[in-house]
Length: 415
Image (cartoon, rainbow, N blue to C red; front, side):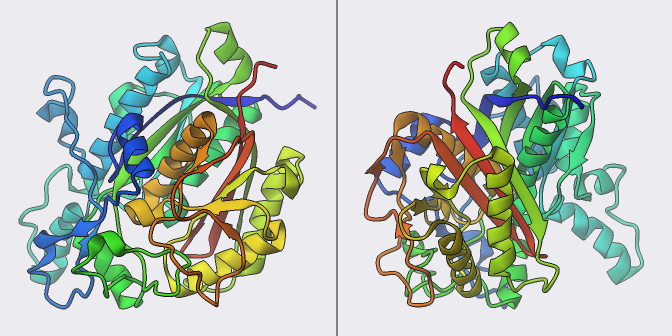
């Protein structure tokens, strides 16, 4: 049997409601500043109850690198994914590297869906029996795998493509499956992560499930409120996060800067209900990751959770986490700061958690003031930054459909 390869992270980049570079994101985290705002552009959406969202910070696109020919098949969700990947490859020192097109680099990337406006173009055929508005790029922009496919075409990636369109676990499954592809020796490097664009249709979907925040429409910075007694639902956000994963010896041979090592991944499904999370299976995903890493719960210094601010989700997740870790492991989530970025959240939150591990701090859960009675008694990080040396962190995501993921990431030490 072949020995499993070790997998390290050599590049990271993102587009988020808190900013598109770590210095900007760190500033907002340290100052407890929210990226949630009142969405004036939704005011004409009749029947939409929530009016808060977390749009990505503005980002520039080089007009030469992103000309019309290159971008005509990209909606915003794919544009952000390609831009984040370009920056991550540069961060890894792999821009223009022959590795990208060698077949030894692949992609594991996803989003909840493609571009909503492209969906509307096809919907017109159903509503009016007319093909008017449908173009040669409509389907490519609409398809759920538009982000990884556009990444592959833009950079000429010829390795495997794993399309992780699994709602809120798209980004974390992307990282996990990329890790497994390298660990097994199938690929030397992988582009991993997820993206999502903000659109009122996303808010409407959660509105129909009574899962959006509506009480704070005039006070957007006060929501979402993960695990808080006054939480009233999630806030939809957008962004993209890309990590470059690489086989350790290959990274060492080229003198790459290494951020961290991925040492464990667990994923499973509830197999019970589309929208009602199952604590037992959430907990099992965490234990699968611990088993994969050969670690015990006491070895984890921080758990970065999902924590969307919904009634059922927060209660189930906190109970699952408590069943594995008890009260003593610090626990946080970034949803209070930037809402729920859906397909991007697993990647963006992993990036932020890794950066915090590097710098020895844990960001608090913004807007958590008083724990709700229905949430377990975890060591919630709140009321400001907590200084904490970290060697091993766990980051978890849980999606509609009962898809659960858990990643364990270790601080890099030369060994």
